Image 1 (cartoon, rainbow, N blue to C red):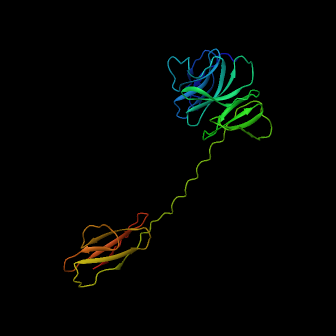
Image 2: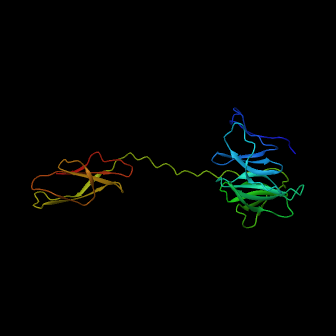
Image 3: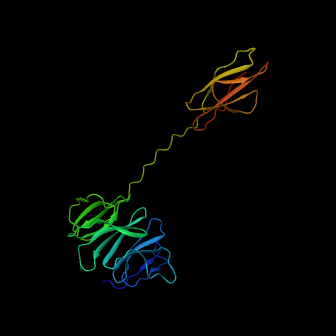
Length: 267
């Protein structure tokens, strides 16, 4: 019907054009899988079939596609790849019928059994298009747009768009982008550390108990005794001590990572 048409590949600016598929007839409707590794297309091999080829050009160019839907008694055309790349919806009709009714079926990306999506015996159903989440398929039935479940279940629902449609293709609007959470308020102010309670002077006890707090909830603490390195601690803290004079320091760090530069101390 359309003569010899082939599939070509080029950059988005039109440069580096290469012949990707040099079929034996009319090759139409190329569509990349989401990973960009495969092209699904309609290839004419006596009748119209749906197949796939690698997205990388070969030398010489491929002439035969791997069949996905290739029943010799049927015309299979106009493929649409699912958003997750696992399935292909397409239009199908019997070769024995010159035109109509067209039906919509789906098949796995590796072929296998076909699943009817819309197969009315009296209506022409065409132009399948997956929703962004892959759960629905929009298509045209005669002159009405319908929405069906992509697994073929349930009853298609008509979409009221005003004027009837007799020809063309459908495309879903992209899924709305997620609204990011607002960035957290910048916190550069360190907390204040307070020793709430400490041991009495000239105590004869062999342990010393310290209770401390931070001006910011959720803070963590580091303590040290007698100038030793700071280590993590919690309040109350009980330390073993020998008789004599000792020094104790504690510093808080808030949830933003700011550390009190002036530790609280008890000598």
